[in-house]
Image (tube, rainbow, N blue to C red):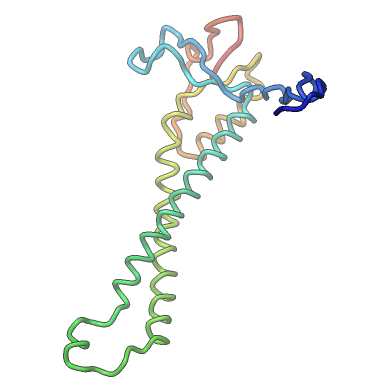
Length: 177
């Protein structure tokens, strides 16, 4: 049935090697006593400002991408309903449907609908990303590299005010933002 060759079932032939796991960019970090206890015992942390920035941009981009895909579906339905001929034209025997005119109407309406949806999706993504990334911490050994991050978060509209207590070490001597 299976054959008589013993090499068919050797570990080299049956075990599939996997690449070692990639270290995570962020992970749970025990919250400081000064943190809001209703948020839970952990805070989102990043190894450095670059990984925080990368994660923020990737998350924002993914939310925008998914939102625009949903908007395309919604716009298609809306445009189809908006550009179809009125029901009473069919009853009174109007001329046959002009598909070229309807196609132009759909193209025009779809362009305007997607433009409006794109702006809404950008705002939605910023609204969804702000709270978790605003409360995230970045492990640092000094404040030298954090000035760019404070500027970047201020530019994005995040509350970038940090007190001396926020910069204190919570564990292992690593300062966190």
